[in-house]
Length: 154
Image (cartoon, rainbow, N blue to C red; front, top):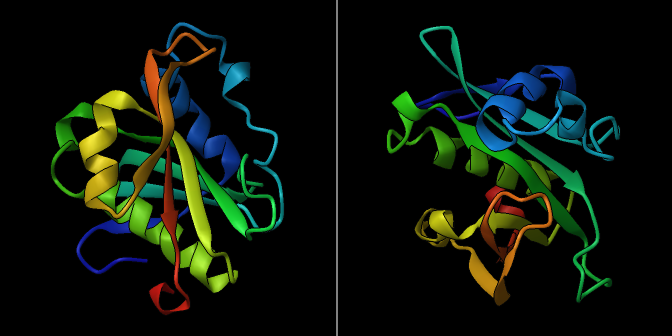
């Protein structure tokens, strides 16, 4: 999926241990199952460093809250292990998701992202949509981030 980082498709089940460990350690692992995990066009991407599993991202078709007419996709479960942060693995995962959305003729990618990751998302072309809010999952302050996707990005 990308030349400089080992990014490849994985199963929904393979995402859950990292989703739990990094994103929701205070919740039951069952809460790391997303409603769109098993949709046929959902992509679960895994990042690997020397065969070690170091990051995840999932992207699935999901309506954008304020613009239902768009062919929107939602990025969820974006996480990397601490030792590879700022090494480009997260960006490579998001780029793989963008390419998947473009290949499916999607025109918008969005996510609920932690406010602490704002610079990361903005570097990849996302912008905030609306005000900061406290996540109902108890995972801290978040923003909705959105990014247009063009067909050339596949």
